[in-house]
Image 1 (cartoon, helix red, strand yellow):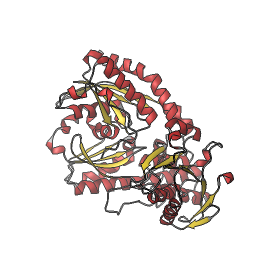
Image 2: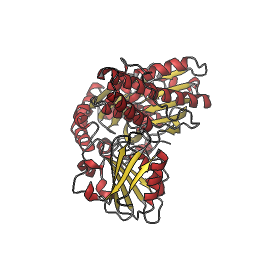
Image 3: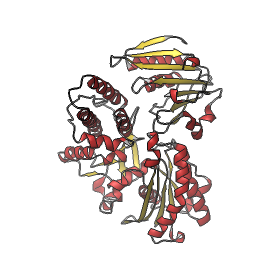
Image 4: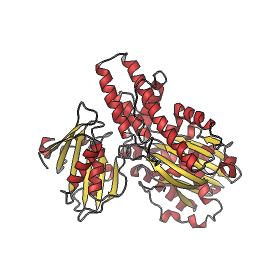
Length: 147
Length: 354
């Protein structure tokens, strides 16, 4: 999917894109999500989690910064949802994000990833753009160099 | 029974000494050290900073709480500490302090769910405590609404609750904070939005009332936040009013939409459960417009006998509600099982109260 662009015309379509992307993951992956308020990042993560077999409701991690879920997937057992909206990414090590990086059975999705330290190397970077139409979003999937 | 309550789940360090009996409660001391100013530059609570500040102030607060209550450790019968949910680094400070005190003072220790604390917070007012054990009060439908939570519970009696629904994305308080950030208002944003809303027109913008017509008791605030974003950006480009008036109108219209949904869903659940009481607790329950709407709408419902809110000082995170919830849980039981509990207890950031 790398290098592709998608136009989503509804929250349901954004979620579906997340479900599709989940099918291409194997574990030990960090997905960086970049984009403004209301551009569909959390909606996308809801789809991603569903695609990985997470049964819980994915709620915004803005307040607690990080939430962990059990995934039900061939090779992926944990799904971690992180939010850098409020703080610089460096703080994330303090809440234990390090425990979930480089784990073969774990996928980490990070919202507001533009705030992450540069040394951070996500597998994919997704760029979410609000368009003029209230329900339409442009979603670009890029490699980390373009961040 | 004298209970020492300890709360450090987020950005308030709080200690309280509560004298508890089924007939009467008396809050002997209650201290809250807020970190709001410390976190303001970040627009929210920073876990590492919070933990360090909790560590600095918790022991001086403990001394002060005991002193104000005119009590020595030997007269404490039970320690109640918030075990979760919350920020793990923050929770650990309170939990480890409580465990250490339980060990060195040889006291029983009880971990309390933070939400269970909010649910009983309206009964901290000595005048409402008699209602807590009265048949005519129950069942109740309780809304816990704060920066981190938006949950609806059915309470059969005090300490007996079942989750009816909750937010599927953002908490209501989080939506207030995000709207505030959009309008470049200072942190914490909730009270600022409420302040501006007073001078605004709640009908200026027609924002969605998410999930209002769904049959379940779940909430959603992410879409409302996005609608506010689009409406604000659009209005800024073609200004009909001054910037100040626009911000006030956005705040008033957003607050009206959020309150509408919170009130309507709670009343719907209350009708279905044949509830006699409505409880609204948590940080957002301090919002005056929300209180006004609850009072106005429950007045016309004969089935609802009481509409209860915590006193202002107990709306935010506090140790008094933790001590009370601990007392309620331990009440009628021998305290022996809670002795040596410190060996087993750990902070649980995702502890869900279902």
